[in-house]
Image (tube, rainbow, N blue to C red; front, side, top):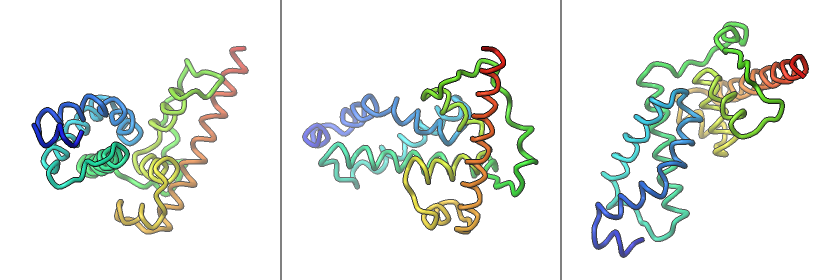
Length: 179
């Protein structure tokens, strides 16, 4: 890919987009609940990547994917902050009513079902859950990224887990009732 980049920045960027756009879109959907918003974040992230192509060493595919992933996570968090949707509720009871029931829930937790459950979390819970569980960030790193305390990060993770467990139990209950 490096030789392609040296020949033509636009062709290199087009190849990057074709190779990674679908994967990165799914990554963004873990942070941003709507597909429309995820499309916007994806475009913003690729614009930022294009602007910084010259400053990144594209020697290997793993480093390139990691670089793009970091850009998309940061753009997702920035989008949530700009939308003033990055809230960190203190009480689970105040947000439970916001989570819609899924009448077509499946008994097995396949990828789509898991993604749907995570997307139903409030933005703050979802961000901390994704950063810690999926991306592997520490609470210290999350606190820095989200401008919160480490204690808030831990608390939000625990609340996200509790809420997901309740959603899974609801799925199990719905499956038993239907079956």
